[in-house]
Structure formats: structure tokens, C-alpha cells
Image (tube, rainbow, N blue to C red; front, top):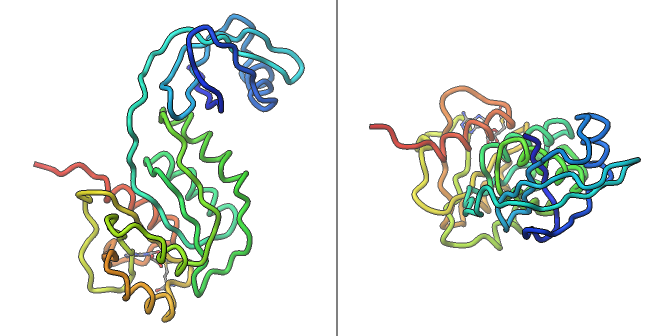
Length: 232
Ligand code: SAM
């Protein structure tokens, strides 16, 4: 079943326009036609069976029919990650979305090498990953900021697990309440990063084991551990 995210209210009987990309994907890539069904979700109104009402030359529309999944909360952790090279940042956004994050916060740290972040591109990647992984929401992607600015605005009731390699820290395990995970850049955190992190009461240093993981591996492994069901 094809699932697509739409930025429009979903109610029985409504007709919703397809984006050019969706129309191309449905007609040109997936060879769907008028009358075929797709599932649509919008992040707040659940998932609906819809019929393709029009489809031609990069244009299309959907007729909304039946609710198949009511909306439910997806209160996943936040991922704060040092901006990486473009392809690696793309990978982190895709995998973090599959792993259920509710927000992605790219940050610049002392040793961040990469420059700008294309938010539109990252939002497209997150949307496609949410469609594929059967989520009902697309995570928020915040504009990239300096790490110390993100920490200054951090909600005090949300624990921030900071992944530190070569550290004598607690192993990361399932979080009890609202949480975030912070992953550093290829070169690790610098002394100025450590100084601001040490001042924050919500920070919890954690290890992901004895090996030095690439930042993207650390993000994926950390998110899995943070949300792992408790055994036994
Ligand atoms: N250049 C650093 C070094 O050689 O020590 C390694 C940095 S690592 C490639 C990038 C980020 O992944 C780190 O800042 C940390 O957040 C995370 N990371 C990698 N391995 C980790 C581990 N074993 N435990 C916790 N965090 C880890």
C-alpha cells in the first residue's frame, strides 16, 4: 500500500490536491491510475484510505474515503546531532525518523566541519522515511544552531543523554521519561563543548560501549538503546 504525507485536513468526502512530486511518483514511478487507492496521513488526523481522483501530467488529486488508523501520540526522543557531511546527515535523518524520533536538532559544535544544512531536503527525507516506516507523524526538523544555544533553551524536564566515547560513563539504556540524545561530530566534542555541557543539570553522560563508532552509527545505536523494551 502506498502511504503519502499530505499537508491538508483529512475528512471523509474531502478532495485533496497531490503535489507535483506525488503525482509523478504515482503515475510515472508506481504506474497507479485514477480509481486506485492510496493511504494518506497528515500528522494529526490519522491515516485514511483515499482514491486517486485525478492524475495527469504532474497533477493529481485524492478523494478521501475511510479512516483506517486513528491518530496516536508518537512521543519519541529528540536527536541532537552535530552537523555531518551531506550524505551522512541525510542518513542520520532517515534512520532517526524510522527509529521514531519526534524532533531532530542539528547543531554546530566546536569541531563541526560541515557548513550549511538544507532544511527542505532534510524535511523531504524525513517525510519519505515516515511514509515508509508507517509512522503517523513526521518529526520536526529544527534549523541548525550552536550547541550552547540549544542547551540554553533545553526543557529542564527532558533528560539529555550525551554520548561520550572513551568515557567512564553509564551505559545508555531505556529512558523513563522525555529524553534527548546528543551525538558529537567526527572529531568528537571539544573542550568548550564539554564546559557548557558540564554546566547543564539535565545532561547525562553515557557510553555506547568500548568501540569508537562513527557519528551516524552512534546515533542509530543510541536511539535503539534509548527506546529498547526492558527484557525479562
Ligand atoms: N574522533 C573521536 C575519537 O577518535 O575519539 C571519535 C568521535 S565519534 C567518530 C563521533 C561521535 O560519536 C562522538 O562524539 C560520540 O558522540 C559518538 N560516539 C562514538 N563512539 C561512541 C561510544 N563508544 N560511546 C559513546 N559515544 C560514542
